[in-house]
Length: 564
Image (tube, rainbow, N blue to C red; front, side, top):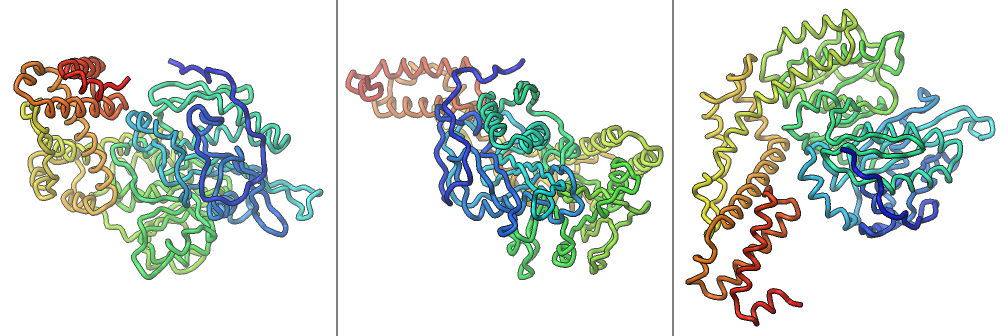
């Protein structure tokens, strides 16, 4: 069912303006304010150009009431141009991710709770990072002193919708480069009429005479850690570390990420500058793809060879594969290069020179044995030039089954920590969720482990122990514990609604009755805000109970609890 398209009158617009003065605060936008619907999708649109005196420079930010700090402006400028322009004649699209620096989020994003309650964790809005979706054009232009027209149109958003925003850029960027500001203002006005992102609904998003259909959630084949086709199979396991699809030496976190005074950070970097090969040679995992020349190879063929490198390293377990594939966050310049027929796994100690061959260099030791049957099928598909979508389907199925085998024992154990429903009584605080014991879980694997659903052999216990030490387990556990706590609270509310509240009130003091009213109101507000998984009938009954209890109190207390 399609959502309605931008109902209501068009709002007054802010005129297109150049990059405004530096400020660390952002203008607050409420749902009734101008650009509220625009802000549901994008933070702002930027244009970055090349200035002979300044280098990359921010030409404009739109809407012009959106404020970026100096550090954010600098990051956008450097990340919006490829490291090397020589191989990028024509149009190039890519994406980056950058840390927000100071300032507060617009308060109207409070409705994130509704969106997050229904969207997969991998598609939720970023609270502390921006995504930048870039359309870079470099063409010869004799009217320019440097001889080239160089400019990037950048969509800045907190949403990881790579496919949608790249498709949007492919529509508006060519038109913008021809008509400039008027075109951009018209497009932003159209986006300001879009409905807000709504998981489970197909949204029709009109722009420039074309209707873009956006289904949330949806499987996507995209150059992003969260939206890579492979990762649609890993949505039970959120990638909880930092990642930057494109990173340069000018990034504000460069020193933080490249220091040798401490262990390498938990981050995936996509880079094109050879300088990083030497600077980061102490990192435990490096995937190097070939030079930017195709030499007659189709992208599907090259990806198959890189895929072989990933599988040959034995990273067929979920966490290992996530780490390995995560490094394949394609940077801007097309790096699907002229790879040799046999790409072998190499140790990081051999990564010393700038002419290092393509391949996966890793210190990672796999816990599970390789799936040789799958490897043979994929390599045979490469040799027979099997379509890449078929190859991808084989790997997706393998990863899905493997991830399910890995996560199901964890889910079963977490479910056992939930208090029994019969222990939840209406007039007492609900019992607590029991703590997660790693030792108890590992002991449970003997009779309820992944061996029940997976034929792969190996050190499953060692793999789980490593998972427990990773940020991904912490992220998974916090999310599951939050969901269970909300479910527990919902069950408690249902128990209250099924109880005889009049009988309970007979021997209760006014203080106790007022306390019940306040607690029921708090639960009702949380439930209506889509934080509690309860039925509509339960909400209605809760409201009736509140009215009934207030009606039993003296008039003066009723006036306090229900002021006119």
